[in-house]
Image (cartoon, rainbow, N blue to C red):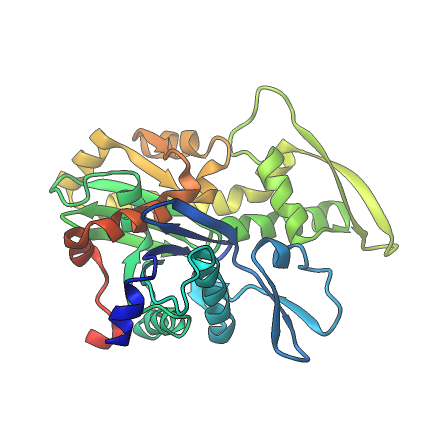
Length: 347
């Protein structure tokens, strides 16, 4: 009874709970939060010092008593308590303007494919502990397809490749379900690690995670550019231990990330090879849609299209497709019931 009462004064939320970023949307305002999935905690008092952008700035720069934690690894809750605190912070932030005494929203959360019942339950429990009165789980490729306005309920197949921070989900969708799919633990963070390792091996210079991310966004590409792109990068010389500045090119970054990109492309081809012929015919006609932050890597769509001989396009505002899909589901109860993953408690 109390849940229903407080629910009337709460805003229902769609959440893309990602390894790299958490996005939150509401029915009336659309996307209201887009911040890194990072929480800074004072280990002496167990107090949350910062969440999101402010906490991300602290990564690699904290004193011993402050920890900047990423509570999700490969799209899965790895630290339950910190995930709960992060969700509670975002839920309270959305309701701060409304002066809601006890926010108890309905929440639709995107989850990766191929997660266990225990991992599903961890997401549900973290959201409920953070204040949600009802939690619906939706597979991220399905949410992304809905966010792109693809015809997911029809018999015609569509193919989504959702490249996030921790995982890449490849799915063939038809009749409100994933007909064929694969989940890879290769995504944006893997590309960052590839860049860190390459610069370490080639230049004996150690760079941080945030520098690698900046390199990937600035000059990262999968196919050669018309002009060579260069970037100055600072890190620690592993021989002298002193700061050092080096120049890197887009060609070197392509070499660094090529192995991971090839593995993703090989997995897409494998899914196409094991998908029923009638559905492959539909995909050939409608093309493959790339979503997620990794889809913005320059030339990735061209490389996949060349390898599969199928048209490939990057979704508009690819980073927000999943959260936009959860927002659409908040407004469409009938579709939500069709596509929601069965709760861990219902099994």
